[in-house]
Length: 263
Length: 280
Image 1: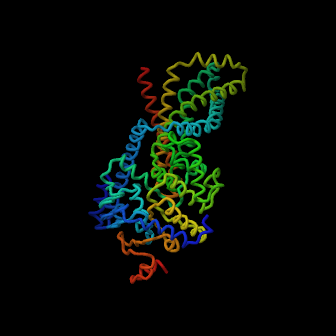
Image 2: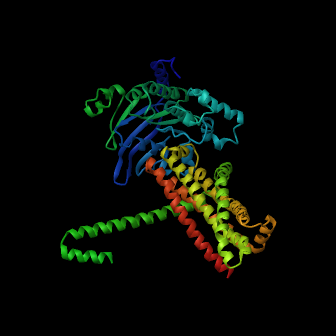
Image 3: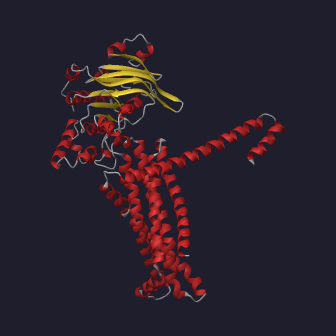
């Protein structure tokens, strides 16, 4: 959808948003999570600032997805502190937690589209609780605008099974963005896509950040996506943050294991 | 008993049998633990249903949609099955009744057995096969493709939206399907009676209504609410808690049918005992 814009143009605009950063949006202190005897996250300490695009790299099974699922509340942490917008989520009541979760968008690896619904219904679904306060015209315009933002204007009456992999990812993104989240969590957004579509999705991530001023965490194995989107990168190894820095820093890291991700 | 024999082996043959004893204990222990955990999990799942069903917001439109999918779309299968059962039961019973010169009792006998027992149980088993497996497979595949997680992060309670609506729809639709299956069964019986005879529909149904009492009808319909509830609940439980990827989808559908069919017989047995006690 952003064919007429170069990567640099888009990234420069996104960087403008990053200049506003400084406010801590997510903070993790000694975060731990185990599944039985499998200690997935051993001691994660991390600070993510407003407007920042953070990429998380690491081998499969090192707990990258678990980490973002902890943030959105799909997985409960065992120990440590997780602060979102300065609030410790373990101390919040259910209603307060829901209010925080409303500000977080999650793009699933598979898109997680509702197969039994059309594209329109998929987009309307997150807004169903607000249907009493939104007019039908407003709802229709919101759906169309979301689809336009991801370049899927013509797919409105299709079902997810009629969409390609890239279109499914874009629709998943549109469905997430319809609630206008302040934090976006991307779980391997370019996995299974061809290089051209991957680049489109990467540009879309930047475009989303520019337009909605989101703070993003991107779990990925795609180095090109990391290069295009990340302001900062952390590498997880053995349940801890093994390395942290910009793309250029880590590409030239003294640690050959860290460097191997960029080769 | 098992432990005693193993200890005896241990005395005679040395160390090898100690391993056998330990592994047997581990297997028994693990199976017992698994069973207890499963029972606890189903109980928690059931209690959660009652908690969520009374708590607003209510998903009326989804209950209606599921009722349509579960009830209306099962109607042809239930109608055909009911008709065939009525027909076959009549044809099979006629020779036996003829031996005792009681052919005239055929409509009444078929009606009582169909309405009291065969109609509800057979319809519930078909319902378990079609709807129970469908719910199990649907929710399991939603689980595998992270759709349930997606609902949770979209500020929707997936349990309420997916489980409560399906269980309610199954509970409400099965009694209606059973009444319809009974009706089609009686039509099948009318056809069966007329294969080797000439009985008018008026006479046939007059005999049926003279022989039937509320005591035949009410308990039979009442138990079908429980059949529907457990079929919906077990299908939902198996699908919602499936966690073995695509393999788990088939497993959820299969175990939903097996467990809910077994549950139909257990409830039926309990219902018959209660009815007998109440009727003296």
